Image 1: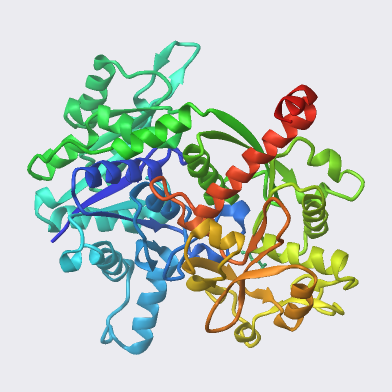
Image 2: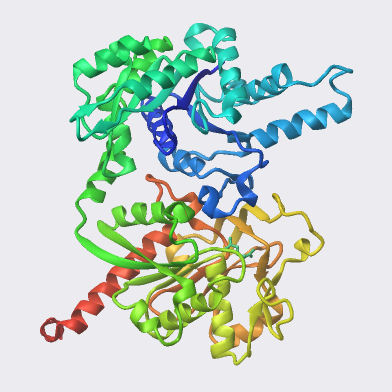
Length: 549
Ligand code: GLN
């Protein structure tokens, strides 16, 4: 049976539990242990699929089509593993299971209660991934902050497991904050003491405290925290602010978080973690040789978390290209024919982001046109590809007011249409075309050059598709549909030959980009942006131009 590590959070939200959990898992994995991470979220939505990105940031989609919390993206990017539906559980899903069982009569006339029925279901799911000898360690991140009413059943489940499991099989890591008061020039331990006390009142005693801090924790402070929170001094771990989240595993290694966890769980010492690949990546990230500026066109740009996986993919792709990728957010609602040249001035590439609904659509179409006509590298993801199709239809095929039926259900030219299997679906949750689907790539295309193979699999999250009634017209007008689903003939990739880099994909390549395996589309897009940047500097600097001639 696997060992279980629970990661809770105290004092405030946004301390980075997901990153700490992922970093610890990375270190254990680098020592040769088989690890996975799951997240338990205290909200009532069955999954985050129906949440507006402004609420919880991006919805991360797994291979098996689960719509999950964005922290699962961090887990995959750090560990280079796939997660599944089982790795993200919400209060809503727990209650749904219990209520369905109650309706089936499974509780044999008993009163169904939070304790034991809800907590039993939570425990069952907490232990699930530890069965079948697939993993040595299962880490569980508990969403929310200790003290929240809604996380109480999860904390109670952890309490019960701490009691039920052999002592060395269960460990609680509590992430907390040590604020620095500038006026007093002092680090303050009281919020942490209170947070640990709150946990103790609920019967859970943390084994390790990971302390977020802006200032280094000296031995005296660590001793004080240890004494008042009842943990060993070496179990007080400093988590200082880092310049990038990818530094955190190394910072945790310096603090020996993995060593103390293994000691407490009675795991025999292993070889030192092998993080050589990780360090190579970090070196390239920190010391880039060039720089490109990419415009990210979207409608949720005020909120960085809404495009988390895309931004992280740029970091991975930038590092491998030894190039700093500066992402400039451009709000699609404010782009028009009149200001597009000015808004997109100085860019080396344009990414039109995924999205839903009508807001900001025309701005995206104008931006695509600008990129197409000005040889600016263009990369459209999901809605971004759909916008490229509409733009080409309107401006190159003369299909007046061509549109997606998502935005205009009566359009004369529905070049993007609801998928056949979507037409009868009314419910919103979990009903899109979700998860991994295969795609066959045509040889001799940009997509083939990028992937280097004819068979790929990428993840999806959409209801609308390219309308194949228009396929021939588009092909005759120069568009190449370089990737199709072999079974359904759904268009997966479109590109425009002759342009330095113009590609749109119906799927989400950003969901499979990891530190060790950057998504090929992003890698090539950044490469194209570098070439564009070179072209721009040559044009700006005629001296260079003549030298080249
Ligand atoms: N709204 C579009 C659709 O449902 C695109 C979705 C997306 O960008 N993820 O097809």
